[in-house]
Image (cartoon, rainbow, N blue to C red; front, side, top):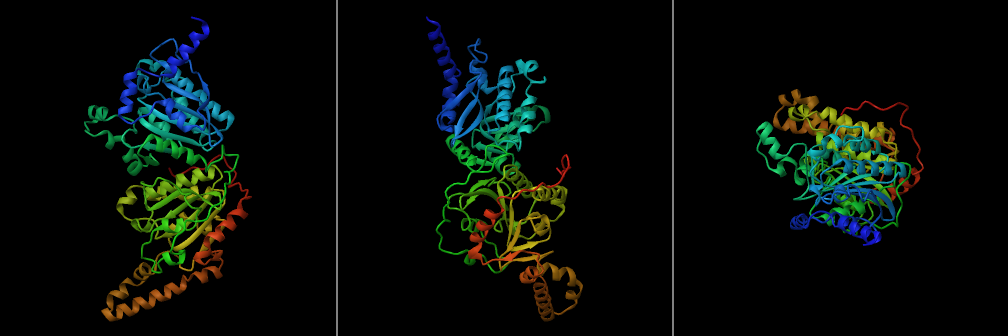
Length: 509
């Protein structure tokens, strides 16, 4: 056999991955082979693969269980690391870790996005001294992720387990896409939980995809298949530049979705009548451009990427149909992370307000709502990208502040004619001020007195009075809102602001 044939045979064997029985097992679970995942992810397969021959002297560890390299997505070069779960369940050895560290270093040098395709049982206990504690041990992976954060987009596609310390890879990514039924992440497995703390729990309860995407918030997007996860990643990257120095690309503009009812017709005049904020979003953005993040987590606030006249924007919108649009600790966290993500990569922000304020009561106070709310305010205030806030209906109390109210340097604060801005709504305000007097009145007197005081209160917070005092910048006809937003975002695109001079803030995390 010539050396060329020998090389070709070695390449073929490594490309096949682990034992056939592990390939078959994955197929039964609906899981693709790592190299098939990469073929679907990239425009034209992986262009450059690094350390292909890692651990090649051991026939049982082809590429040491991870593929690392560079390919193109939508014409943009990206770095990737992808576990091969047919090789020791995708576990990490010394060379696995070194490969992962090196591709992160490449992403940093080239300033291009970094993708993590995770399907791993975690560290190989037999190799722990070589791969766990040292300066280029597994901890370095997380250190690099923290350095890359906000520098280049980092995306995690979770196809299988991400166990123990490995669970911090998705935790440090900008976005985590989880495949229902197969993806999981946890610091301790159900078996370990039973052994150590006596808790009997299922894998789904402990760290399943549904749980993380709806309860913990560690997952951002729940999908049913690996193909869906890969398509989401390709779409998501279209909204982002390669790194923090660049701006997102503009694409060809589209009109809004063709809908019968106008914006004016869908917004109820009664502040307490719920309406679906998605209906307003559909009438503002380019058709089929909404890419929602954390849809199943804290749905009382909507966060997502979209396009307006071809330009990428981030939307933060209260959802009156869920819990009245009130902010809770989870919704504040959700908004804070999304605002920070958009600001890091120069994506303009649109705030759509219909908010009664933050939730009150013992339960949320014990959950730290003040701390979580302060986090949202900090991220919103620090964002230096173009920011436009729209008061759709109500903006009460600290809800006005959290949603980029006038005091927080939005480039513009727009109100619709239906808007109300106040410390609290008329009903609550009259009750708070006149409760004792109301209690002394007869039923007929009460109704007349309450109506009189509510009318006086409404006159005091009349939106044209606030416009006259320049609290808001303009009042717009609902059906002209998209036109106004498009014009303003175009003008504000050249905005250059340094928030303040310091090392970093001390955040209420």
